[in-house]
Image 1 (cartoon, rainbow, N blue to C red):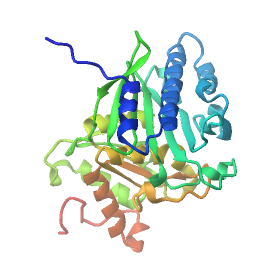
Image 2: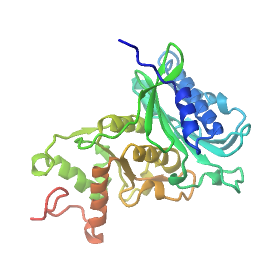
Image 3: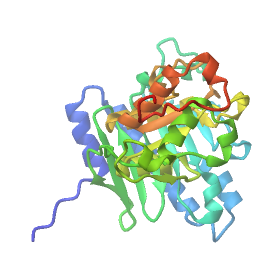
Image 4: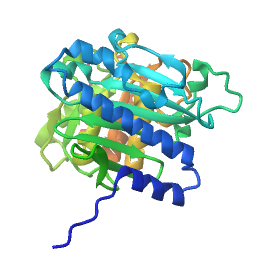
Length: 341
């Protein structure tokens, strides 16, 4: 049997650059740099159990040698709860791009030897850029490239340049990323959802309604079995949804607006871009994520993403909820998947 030729990330990007006028040589070089950063982080956290997990958290900021000459527009250390948010504008290149990293998503998983990851996003540098954090305040629809790396039994680098989603696995023998998951599409009809059940006391009513209808099991029109998942890593949840389908809900907390955990710029926007390119959808429940114009760099939002059908049902729940019922502690008999009695 003839061996199937393996396509490296470098070869893939060369093809993308040749067939995509938006994929400039500068952009390709920056994507290679991002992959190098992710490879360096994978090597560092792979020693976390042998060294010190807290030290691994601190050291991830040192894994950015490809952008060592860059102008840092925004930086927040992992210790402050932002998981190493970093926005840079490479100074040695044409200066047309801004690169955003969430360097260590799911950092609490390090002590459990569980998967964590890195999220990245590429934005165009504004023509009137001032070299300040305000240059980052662009809607997610302006992203040029986005993706993530997941550090598990294997390290994977998953990205989109606006024409599909492709996954590359790190070959430990060569240090190269190899295309293993081309043209990823979110499977439809999967009965899985992920939500932090311990926050149920502060779920807003439309979310409670969606979950309760799922929990009703045979009383709904859903023919498939459902399962409830939960991993302390947005990257891990995204990867599961890309490969197995379903939906994730990180809803608005009623009475606790400061409790939102999903960064618009450093997490929701890149994940929303990628999920949309894989045939899914991403929303706050009230509006599509990529349409939001950010007001500040540290802005956080409610976040729902995954299969289009499920996200559409959750948005319908929000649209149908009247103000009077919205503030009520309980619902009537009408369920999400069945008609009124």
